[in-house]
Amino acid sequence: MTQQRIAVYPGTFDPVTLGHLDVIQRALKLFDGLIVAVADGPHKKPFFPLSERLAMVEESVAGLDRITVKPLKGLLVDFARENQAQVVVRGLRAVSDFEDEFQMATVNRRLGPGLETVFVMTSEKFFYLSSSVVRELAFLGGNVGDFVPAPVAERLKNRRKQV
Image 1: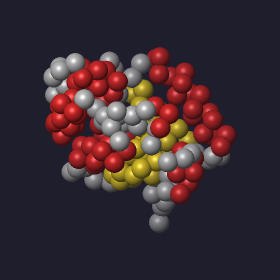
Image 2 (image 1 turned 45 degrees about the vertical axis):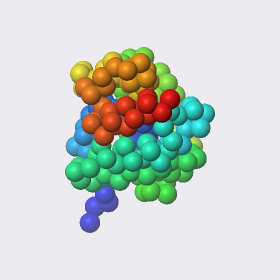
Image 3 (image 1 turned 120 degrees about the horizontal axis):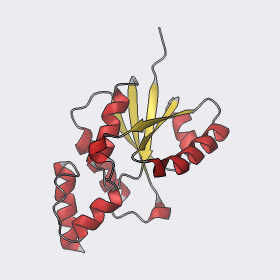
Image 4 (image 1 turned 120 degrees about the vertical axis):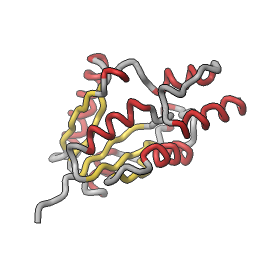
């Protein structure tokens, strides 16, 4: 029996966008299972708390098979080891993403020998899309419906009313 190829797709997902979902769907074509690891990210001062980001990702991937959504606290290499993941999936939008991603992949390889990183290009429809752009648009009252799943758009709308 062959070992399952499990990958982990880490991020803060603050909020999850259609670009993230595009990377998730592409990764599912490559691996037997995918863990979407929602990072605590306190150094980033997230707009949404971890519990709500986890819920948004779970709602957004509902109906997709072979996906698990888990919180990520601590080092990614430790998380991958604990969850028997052999590969880290990272999405790339543009060439500007590559330098930082390459650096992180190199550090992860040093900390976790045998942990590979696979870069997945998002669809050209989402090259421009980032969570920070979505947050800014939502905060200013813009329609984010073309950029995020419906449950996320609703949460952004409700969050704007609270701010």
